Length: 225
Image (cartoon, rainbow, N blue to C red; front, side, top):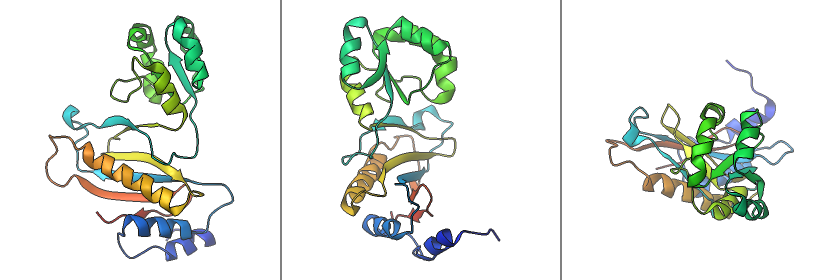
């Protein structure tokens, strides 16, 4: 039997016997004994998709209605005439070939890369650098767009990219433990509604198998579907 800390064991004792409503799941989560730092609240949806089939793969971006309590480090690949505006919008760095060369040299100290469509002929050279880190701009994720400035603002403010993993799961941050219960409920319900909305037409049978929320250092609470 694994040995748990006293805090973790006391949190396990607070878990309900089965899945609960969104409101109740958030109440349980907020009742857990927490460490001193403000934990992220994560949601995971286990889906009945076949990740090996391209027409069932899920990838996109999502902005929580109540935010997620943190910002992202964003860069923008764009023409010089847009670089200053992208920087004003929150981009850590913005530029064209010179930024491509900097990243080709090994710099990847950022969370999101935005690119205008005309820059992709240069950015494509970074596939081996950005691809394995999940940082390659993509139209499906909303990170390749003609409206670079708006995309920078949204992602810098906490807009998140999501994509299913090999197990058919989607992971997302829905807030911080310090958020009011109502704000966490609204964000979590928005995530659940989004998961339902993006259901691939090719998916057969049970689509949403399980949704669980947890803090960075808490047990997971399963939500009734």
